Length: 396
Image 1 (tube, rainbow, N blue to C red):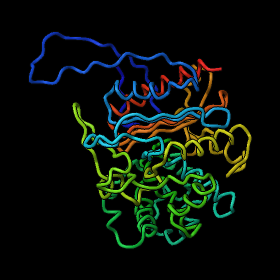
Image 2 (image 1 turned 120 degrees about the vertical axis):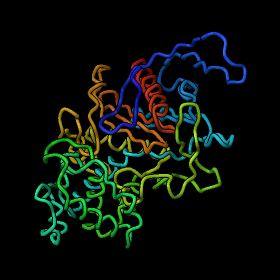
Image 3 (image 1 turned 30 degrees about the vertical axis):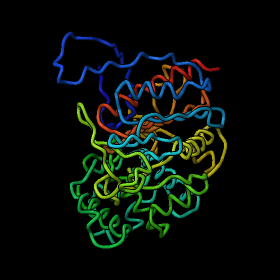
Image 4 (image 1 turned 30 degrees about the horizontal axis):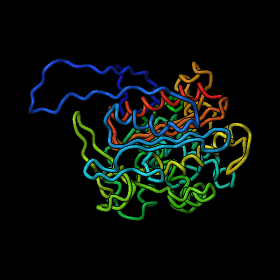
């Protein structure tokens, strides 16, 4: 069985076969072996059985909680959640709860960049030196010609992560100043790959976010709230691990071990450092994300919204081959076998896992979430995603 691990480069689409089995006697002092529940039929969209299917996927990997939402023909056709907010408390998840989406944040930063392009504040061909000419004496030659487009397409050659990230939040200054200082540090180092080579980079998105902040003269979080969340009515979206420590008012992320989970309270250490926000720190409710996903689906189909249709389509245009990476979005060629090429992304901070995608050919969009990371989080996500795709194929 191919296990889904922390996904950096593409959405993992794996078929899994689960079989209930018994291996004879076991020590009575140990818990009985886990037996996966029987697999339900996929059914069809809107038949009222999504909640049952979400619970099956959750129970199959025995993860704390899962959720899913499907949009079809311009509206939410079904949504469902199952499980508990924390393994330490028997508090059930709710349909309006918030979920951390990890690297799916990159698609939002790229969308924000295109919004600022349309506002005339920056272009996709703007370079870090255009934004910060004072770096001329320190920027590495390998980054002199790098552009905002390169950073958003992961083709700038910027390293994947940076050992200095832990110090970024303790550096002096505002969050904007921290990002600006971190960007200067990164741009002074040699690239990990030649410009034009696809090289997935979390810190590259931080540099892109810092460029947007400088040109718009506002913090990335504020820009996302005012340019993206508010226009789309995303009132239950924010940054970092959701909820208030000790209140169990939202799902908690979980560290995952072979036979157990540890719930992580929101607050320090529960997410990536704040300065890395443009890469990976957004949380959303399922309903909020449906609005965002529908905007991109409609834009790819030719309908303007927060962006012109042309700008939406530029965001989805593949730049890096063969990975199929565009600007914060990835073309999922594996879905072509199902008759509907799609665009999407996934994300995990090792305490949460999320996958989203949309298909213009089927006029459908999907998001699947869980509040745990690791292999079990990835496998539960893949299990439910595969079942939802079968459900879509069976629907008119």
